[in-house]
Structure formats: C-alpha cells, structure tokens
View 1: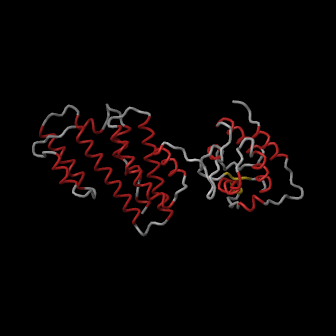
View 2: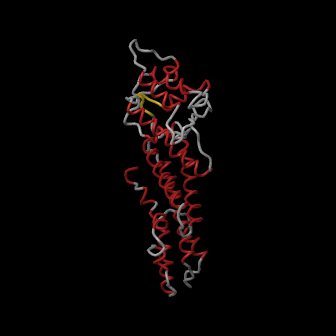
View 3: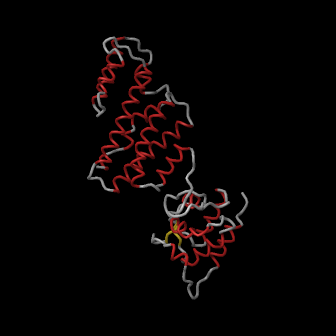
Length: 306
C-alpha cells in the first residue's frame, strides 16, 4: 500500500497554500477581483464537489448549512478556511485507514508515518520563518494532523528521531538522549564546530567509519538521538577506553547506566550491536595499539578553539 501513496501529493493543498507567493497563489487567483455572483456560485459548487471526493462525514450538508449556496455568498477567506478544514479531516482519515489496514507491516508503518511527520515538520518550519496568508490557521491544522499521526507513530517507534523532532517542535522542549533504563544526559561540553573538528579527527585516525555522518556524531554528543548509530572501526576495548577517558572531562559523569547509553549510540563498522556487557568488560588485544584512541581522547578533552 505504501508504494501507492505519494506524501507530497497528499499534502498538495497545504503546499500550494504555503509555498506559492501572494501574486501567484492558486487560491488568490481563484477569487481576486471576482464580484460576479454567478462566478462565486460556481466556485461554491466546486468546493462542495471537492468535499464529495473525500470521506468526510456530512461535509456537503455542513457546508450548505454554513453558506447560502443559492445566493452565492462566499468570500475568499471563507473558501480557504473551509478547504483547510476539509483537507485536515481527509488527512486524518487517510492516516486512520493506513493504521488500521492489517496488510501493512512495521516497515510500511515506519515509511508512512516518517514521511507524514517530516512533511508536516518541514511546512511548520517554513511557516515560522515566512509571512504567509492564513499562517495561524494552517499551523493549527498541520499540528492537528501531526498529533493524530504521532499517536500512532509512538506506538511503533517511540524513540525514532523524526517522532522526537516533531515532539520537540510541538512541546518546545528538546529531547535529550536517554538510555532505556537510565536518565543520564549524554551531552558533551563541546560546541557544534568543535564536535565537527573532533569528528574529522576520528575519521582521519580511522576510529570512526566514513559511513558515519557528522550530523549523527554531533547529535549524539549534544544529547540528541542520532538518526543512525556511530560506526566505530576500532576495537571494543578502544571504544570503552575512549568513553572512560572523556567521562568527567568532555562528558559529565555518566553513572551506572553509561554502557547502556553507549550501546544505544555506537555500533561496529559492520553494524553489529554492541552490548553493555561487552563494553563494561572488554578484552584487550595482545598487541593492541592505543596511540590513535589516545590522540582522539586528547583532542576530545582539549578541542581546538572556534
């Protein structure tokens, strides 16, 4: 089912309303300078026909009760607000149908909910930074759809980065990365530029895989959930040493739950899971060279100035 759904098309109404300028707006063109009652009457019929196309309960009756169709009394503002209401209900219905479809597995749910939330998040951020007609009404509608989606998304993916970003936007509170059993913040005292420099050093020392993104590394050491785990090329012993040596310096004291946190953030270069027990009791190789990890530790604890 997921392959047949184009999320951008589903949000086409909001995209047109948000991203097109006032001069070229689809809706502004529809009503600009139109005072002809016959024209307005025909547009009202278009709105009603639009509502008939989607499974919104009694939409036609609700609309006809709100406006006198025969008299053609409708304004541009009324037209847009009605379509916002209708489109909000349609998207909520789509989400509900997808959620209840037994043929959709976890992968389909992950794809669908992440696309919906990322699309809404993108539009909300745009609205925050631009002067758009009906800004408050659009934001309210998008937040309704986001809340409706997030309830289902949390059921499947409560720790997913996209869900947490949307939650942070809605609540105004940042989510810090927490282990599954503890609540210690995994947050360094380095700023973003310093973390980027340290990351580059980790790549050059061949301790961090080039498949790891700097954004994930920066998020991980800023108390956020990285989208993907950091791939550690070095040994488990060198990783455990790295964490122990930066704890209390670049990182705060992590306490008893630190290895659960580390196992949530790091994996091997082959994407293998690292367990807390492996990190807590790592085996040192006979001829293991720690020069690279020691250099990495030194830079992390004493990063270059901006």
